Image (tube, rainbow, N blue to C red):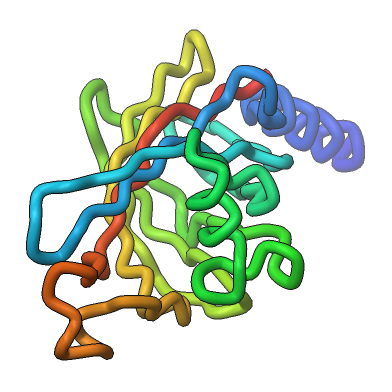
Length: 182
């Protein structure tokens, strides 16, 4: 009898937890980098490679996202090539970046914060990302900024190269978009 009860308990908990994988075709990540001392900004895109989300009892219990760094794109081919080079993200060597949720978080009707670890160029730091999640559509919307210099991307940083002035690039860059799960 105890075995039957245990099997039922496992089955019920499995049914109540939803694990979904990323729909890479529908998901989109936008990035924006800005000048440190002037008004220009540049925007491009990245794609997800794979990942998953687990939702149980109105909480996100697991989240793991792999970003395809080789998909780093911008309409200017010279800039795209430069961003993919050793000066920035070295996408031939570091082909992916990841985000992994550290602890379960309750889903609110509006925005809430996911605390996790971000790994870029084999450097891992804790990041807090503001998100909203539509459970019915299984879409995670996000908008946050990251300090590129923590991850070893220091090209034209005003904190590393003090005399740059007009060529300085802000250390913070924005990422936003949506990750769709199926």
